[in-house]
Length: 147
Image (tube, rainbow, N blue to C red):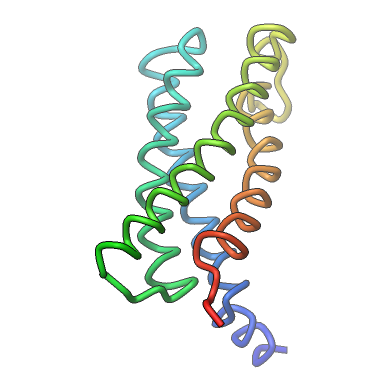
């Protein structure tokens, strides 16, 4: 059992999940910190700040540790970074639209579950979809292994 777990953690999928969790943690720490500072009325700005910080972290970890893209050649780096940012911007807008609906239309901040307000819960649910989208983009488009 332990050998299977270690094999999974060392696999590309396991590393993606590990660094995905760390990226999500970075995103949440920044999001929650700025939510307390700026308040829920600034949820989209707060999410933008969290997005920028977590995308930088995600690119570096995905490039080096998950998909092991070791090239620092300018053309390859430019292609990877632009594709990575474009894919993340797509998932960012998906999350922004979801947060807008949850905060400004449904007003889920009024509801809480286990002491966690509805906006934070909404962000967690939206994050599941964002992680899946980001994996598909990274695996099959951005860091695709050339044959």
